[in-house]
Length: 111
Length: 111
Image (cartoon, rainbow over all chains, first blue to last red; front, side, top):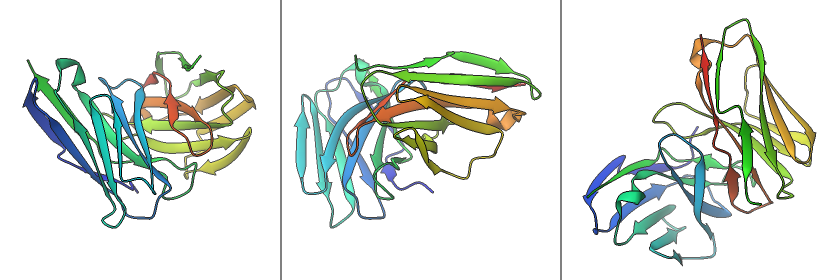
């Protein structure tokens, strides 16, 4: 069974706007990761946030983690057409090597 | 070198065929993974190898047979597959408790 649930399932915004995606999970975790996937190809790692961290930044990406609510969010600021992709959260809550993915959010950036 | 290389990129096979998918990494990662991904779904974990030993098998049918010949290579042997096994097969590698690096996947079609 999938560990993470994401919302929204699909998001369409205008270029330049911010995009926020949310992820909820069920069990305790060591870390939570976000990945991007373009057109059904390989996944690219974006950010890893550990359970003792609350917020992490990488360029235009900001990830928050609330372990009390078992939830995380990914914010992409100043979106670009190239950000169009599917975004997945993944958790290791069922074992350090058992990386389990959420359902994903399909993000479309309209020029 | 932060690449995970998968071959072939595309594979069409009949239900009586035997084929193999190959995965290679030279990052010194000691954990390697096989995931299966259907269209518009998240990747589903199939197998995990840790230090060249099979550590996780997610109840995958025996028509899928993984092999880890050495610390850089991972194979997935396919035999007597069904049309519903058609999917994108992703290989990944990681160090313990770190992000995973994914290959571009093999698009498998079973006819």
